[in-house]
Length: 103
Image (cartoon, rainbow, N blue to C red; front, side):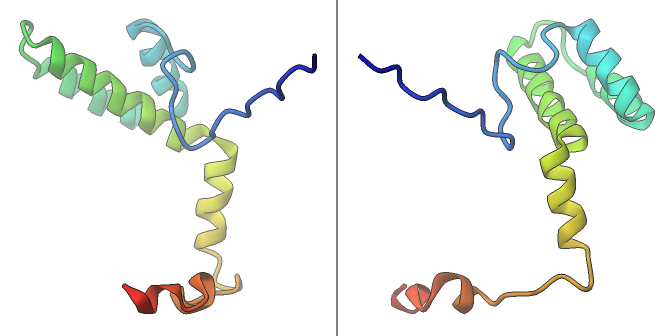
């Protein structure tokens, strides 16, 4: 028997088992990444209804995702490359090879 190859995590998605696991950890990570983000998070957190578990879960999910977007090296490199005026530019026709014409 051979072992299946290990799946590589998708750097563009947050996983429920990765990143900050508690509110305290999320606050600390946001503080380290961006004090302005931490302030905005605290403001939004303070505006939640205490009885709304769904709103709380959504807020945490959104901010965990934002944290990944602000700190993942692959994402930061892609953003920097997209803003590089010397980087090659491609049309959708070049990327899709004419496949979009049939839509």
